[in-house]
Image (cartoon, rainbow, N blue to C red; front, side, top):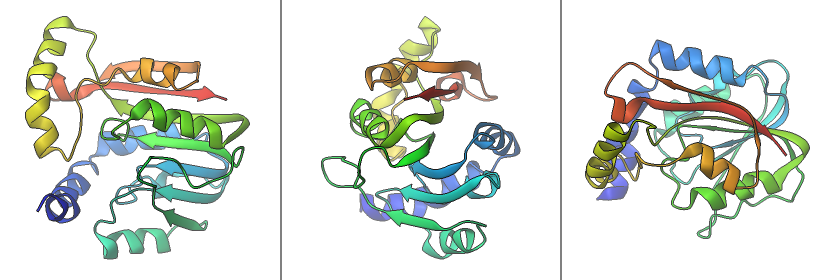
Length: 205
């Protein structure tokens, strides 16, 4: 039942919500520096595709959930570069050799990966020396009262949000994964603060 919920109901809801104008603007700004061979972690329904610049040569998309197939196929077909979709093994290891990609991208994904630190380490492994990791995530608030509410609500939120955590310290996760962020911006999106604490930035291998 949970698989049906995530693949059909939750995916449709999130595909609609994540097309908001403000989120599209943030995607475009983040992805402006993408180039060459790009790895996207947490491809979802392909909402990043139209925001990649002409400097992207290929995109390899990793996501364990194959949702909204027709909609996603249409978005891939419209992309001006080749898109390859791959799954991920049960242990979370990426099926690629080291030093393969110029850029890796994660947008609203680290919140729902079971072991986010291990995932970031894998991203670092498959990036070329000097390769960049571009990220846009939500996570743990630096406001103590908001963080308390995030911890209280998280167990329920994980159930209805397909495993989405509210209390991931994204900056610390990226550092523990072996990166030293070269830029990091924290900001709030409109809406309930427990859901709106954003981390945007880049890190270089």
